[in-house]
Length: 161
Image 1 (tube, helix red, strand yellow):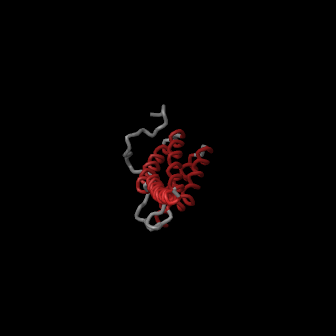
Image 2 (cartoon, helix red, strand yellow):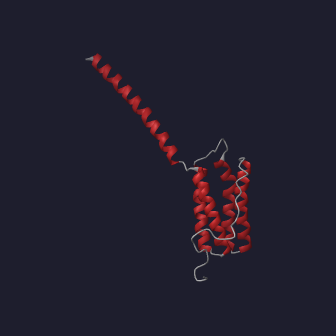
Image 3 (cartoon, one colour):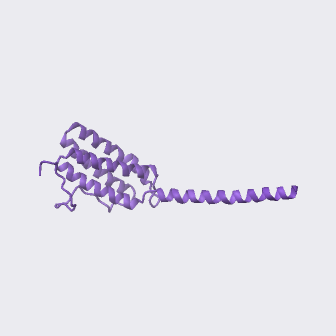
């Protein structure tokens, strides 16, 4: 009977070890799946910044608030994931270079000083480009807007159309 209990205990130890390894492997896979894809995040950020320019040009505070909120969410995802890209600390750089400038844009918007809002928006674009330089991707240059609006959206303030 003692040999049987010893064998049963050994079996439970082996099975629990195998399960522990499998659970840890699944946790790693899930964590990797929950990390934002950097290319997709950057593409979305570029789209938001582009649309933000048109909303600022139209002085549409509600739309600006919306886009700033979306930009904050993406930057928080990148920072929280502590992303690295080819060894470059994109999460840390986003935290130190971009998040403070987004906060400054929000403060400028609260002041209703449109020149300051435009200036802080340009600072966001410059922060993006500075980050690209810092990570060795200086060929990626973000601009404010193009001559024609490529989006299927009206950026003017409701009632001003």
